[in-house]
Length: 203
Image (cartoon, rainbow, N blue to C red; front, top):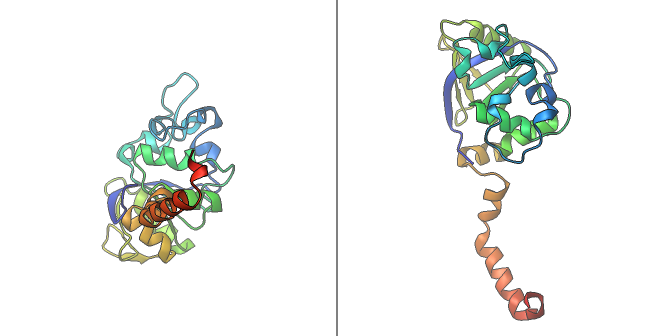
């Protein structure tokens, strides 16, 4: 998993509440177990008409938001069904951070497993960041996980809290597999002892 330390990029304002996982990636696209190639169908039904042409009013179809790395969204982002394809699609599109006042629990947990930082802020802070993202002339934010701050275009900073264990995992690029591999010496030692004491298990 790619490390997350500091991210500077265009932030897209999505001032809607209850953006659910079916909006993030419709169930039609859940037939794959690959993590790549899903960016093209991120927000599929909001981005495209039935004939495949773009819906020009949707924010990610507009400049400069086609290069979005950060989404500033309304309350309860990622609600709905528990599909890990949702963070896969965001990541494949290039989004590595979502800022909101609250997240659905399963989506929130899945973000950390896939190298995406979900940042929870207050309503007043979200309003300020939403206004920043809506300024097409300079919608860039900087999210620093080490200092736990978001730097706004005017230089002001917004602090955020995050669980220390999850923070360390993101900073070091450790998903569940990476955490397990940190204990590979103990695993190898256990297996060697088991082979010696219970060899019939390995025949």
